Image 1 (cartoon, one colour):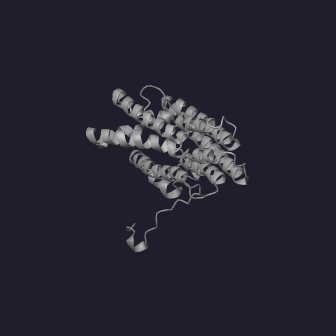
Image 2 (cartoon, rainbow, N blue to C red; image 1 turned 30 degrees about the vertical axis):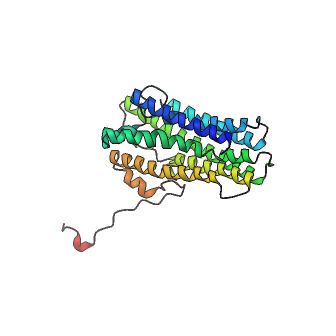
Image 3 (spheres, rainbow, N blue to C red; image 1 turned 90 degrees about the vertical axis):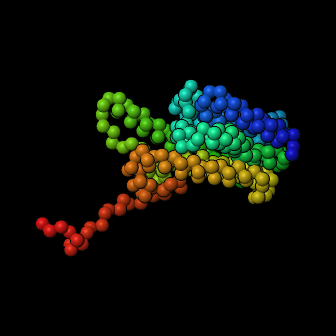
Length: 283
C-alpha cells in the first residue's frame, strides 16, 4: 500500500471514530451525513496534492469532486442538515425498530464505520490515477468527465424539483390550503421515483472510468467503490420507500407506474377490470 493510500485510510479511520464518538455524545446520528459531501473532495485534494497538482487527470478529477461536493453541501445545508437536531429521519425510525444495544452496534459498524469506508472507496480511482501519474489524458477521460457533469446536472435538477415541491407543500399547509399531492411526481420524478439517487450512483460509475483510462485495465480495485455504493443505495432506497408507503398509501400506485431508479417512460395507470354482468348486482 502506498504512503498516500495509507494516510487516506488512517484519515478515514479517524473520521469513523470521530463521527461515532460525536453520535454517542450528542445522540445525533447524522455526523457521517455531514461528512458525505466534504470527505471525498478532501481525499481527492490529498491524492492530487501528491503530484503538486501537476497531473492533468488528477486536477480534473479533483475539480469535478469539488463541484459535486459544493452542490451537495448546499443542498444538505438548506434542508437543515448541519443545524443542531438535523438528523436523517431514517435513523430515528431504525432506533424505534431496534433495541438500544442493537442500534449502538449498528451505529458503530455501519453508520460510522462502513459509511466512512464507502466515502473513501468511491474516490479510489484517484489513487489509481496517482499510481499512473503522467499518463496523458485520452478520449475515455473526456467521456468520464462528460458523463460526470451530465449526472451532476441531473442530480441538481432533481434535488431542486424536490426542494421546490416540499417548500410549496409546506407553504400551502401554513396558509391552510389543501395539498394536492404529498410527494413529488412531476419533472424528473415522472420518469424515476428517485432520479437523484440514480444520478448519484451513475456519476461515480463515470468517475471510475478515469481509473480505467489511467491504468488501462477495466478490472481495478477501485471498482469496489461504485459497486459498494450501488449496493448501499439498493438497501437505503428500499427502506426509504417502505417508510413512504407506510405514510402515504397512494405511493403504491406511484410505484406501479414509475420506474424505481432508471429513468423510463411511466407506465399507464391500470383501471380496475369491469365485473361481468352476471356478477353485477341487480338493479
